[in-house]
Image (cartoon, rainbow, N blue to C red; front, top):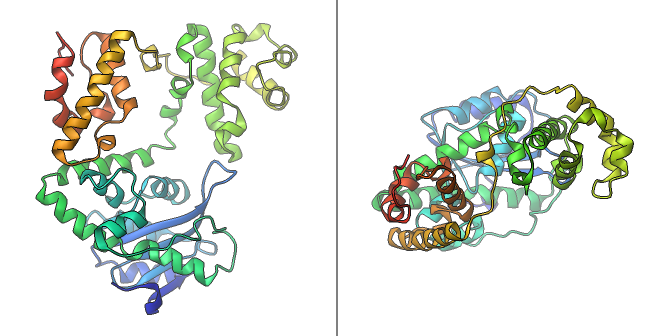
Length: 388
């Protein structure tokens, strides 16, 4: 296994070097990738470094001076090339929002470890130690990856984060093939990529109101108001490049929606006098949000109350508890992490939808391979149910 002290670390810091690198790698069928970024006070992560390892050499791609990413995007989008990450979600989100690209064929070593029962959300260091018996340092995680020049220790750490990924991919893939889990794993990785691609889909923002705690308590007019406010916040977070909670907190949007009723009869002065609403928020954005509400500026789809997180009844809570127990049992038989098979929030939606519709409706998160392995165990818990 080559390491960072083998003098195989290459810095790629301009368009010419990047294009030459991507040209050289056109015939490589597997590459390992990782990213370093800063996201302390922004909505979008700021890309600081991309690490790429082809099994022989490590390339540290410095994005500061690079303006032409076409060859890189083409490289990772090729359908016959596997791109290996560890815990890919944040990296994929960053690549999608920064470069508008995603890998065509993803292998996430953290997800693979969960499928094999090695642990849920295992760190890269822990998985490398467990599978390969190698030690990886993790002492510069919180470095400023936007500062230049990068230190020798930063470069070494960054390289270590991809050196072991090809070996992990080989070992973990073999185990998943032998345990007949490779197709389930492929479905999971495809869904992770699709999620990253959908981050900037305006249609998903229209349902943001359903994620606000206690939204189920609101009447239809207040819910429509909350929907407008949450959609406005999604737009403003991206426009200002600030975390959504910095634009407006959930509780403030909820309280405005609860109070406001008819926007034409409400003024910013009245909102400022409400104890439950942040006055600084109203002073900064009150006029704009009231103007948006009065004119119904955003033409959004109708409210869907089925999306709201209603509290479960006593009988539903009992079913949920049994579902959780059966997930653990099925996961043990399959030698996989129960958290991977079904998280509590997935099961809550399953049970909640059963209460609402009167039949078993498998939510998207529990479809495909999860439904395949759980349905025989779950069906007896939902009597007189025609499942979908």
